Every structure is written in structure tokens, then in C-alpha cells.
Image 1 (cartoon, rainbow, N blue to C red):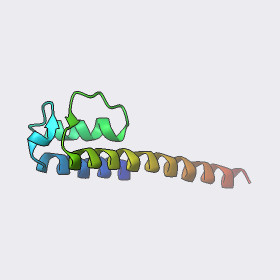
Image 2 (image 1 turned 120 degrees about the vertical axis):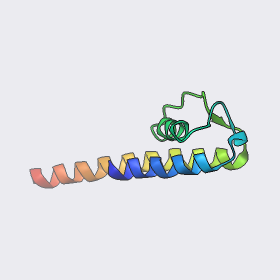
Image 3 (image 1 turned 45 degrees about the vertical axis):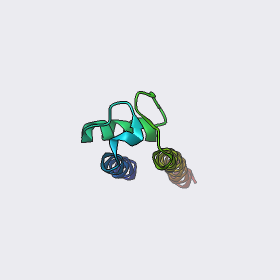
Length: 87
């Protein structure tokens, strides 16, 4: 869980540092950047803030991919521990 939050925070900082013109919608404050990152990494994707620049699009795709991988690894680790306890 901590890794998930760290990745979301890192991407939020990246989004905040990018020019606001690279995103359609309101991305003006660090809170907006954390919102975008949280919605992206959880793959909810409301669509109210979307990347309009190629680099922004790639960063969003990369964050989604990392979020999915972290979920799979977390479940795999958890299930592996449960299986070892039962054996």
C-alpha cells in the first residue's frame, strides 16, 4: 500500500511540474495534480482532467501500467503468504 501511495505522489509531483497547457481541464494546484494521479493510478479515469500533450499522455499510460502491476504483485504476495500458512 505504501508503494502505491508513493508512486501516486511521485506522479502527482511530475504532473504539477509540467506546463498546465499540457492538460485539458483544471490542473492548477498540487491538489489537482494529486487528484489526477489518484484517479489515474486507480484506473477510475473520470476524464475531467486529461492530457493533451504526447508526454503527458505517455506519463498517464505509464502510471496506469505501474498501478496495475502493483496490484497484481500485491495480490500475488498476499496469496503466496496465505498458501504458505496453510501448508
